[in-house]
Image 1: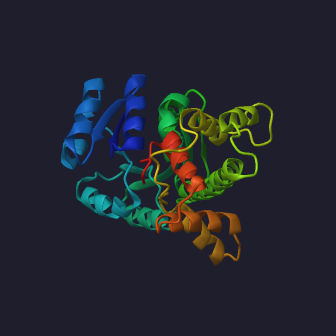
Image 2: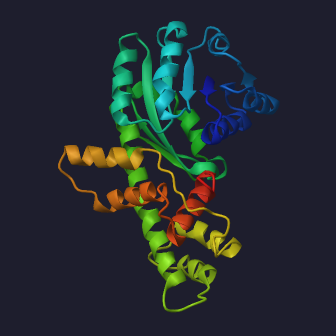
Image 3: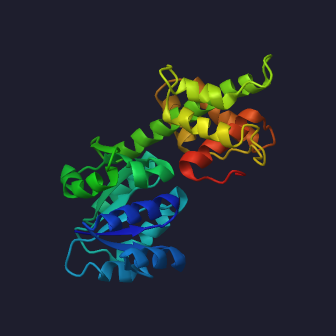
Length: 302
């Protein structure tokens, strides 16, 4: 099977690399800049330096393109692909798109006899080693079955994947996942700030984090990353504490309001990130930034 990965940023590069290294697929790679293409080509990927070259590399096989692009440019790139995509192609959006945009794009492509699939991808920069968690939506379940071997490869050794139904459902599930993630991270950050600034000075936060990873109720991957952070940089030096937000929590809140549900924890966690961009920073926001760096490779200083 051939598959093209378009967008070789932090996540896209990992996905392409994992597929190439499996030696189970022919992987075509494309990116705006040339260097990541060359790096993947050195591992065995098929380089494509423009979109026409991507399509031509499929020859007579079905075109399957996995997009790993920022949400705000997906429409533009789809419009560039439409004139050259053969009928019956499959376009996969693996980025963090708004599920409402996904449904709209799906309808647009369906009218052109092009299938569209949404896959919310979690796992951060650890996915290449531990396996990705992938949430799939598509109006045509046959598309899911067709790429199942690709998902199995990307999930190895301890990730997972699941099909959730109609177009947009994969991105919806990932949106809610990220909203929960905001709240969990904020709770941990606030707790460790209290430990740091509370009445008992010089508590060993590394020791606490490691203890909590052994049988406690708050044992988690996020807390294990905090244990690493506390062993390396307990005072969180050289971290400015500005925490970016990428949209999913905001979309979760907007969707909840439309159906009359309150999300006070997710709302507050989003507000704190927005306030950090205005200069309201503290030990907690610095820890948020450090966590994002650990699991996602995000810049420590925004």
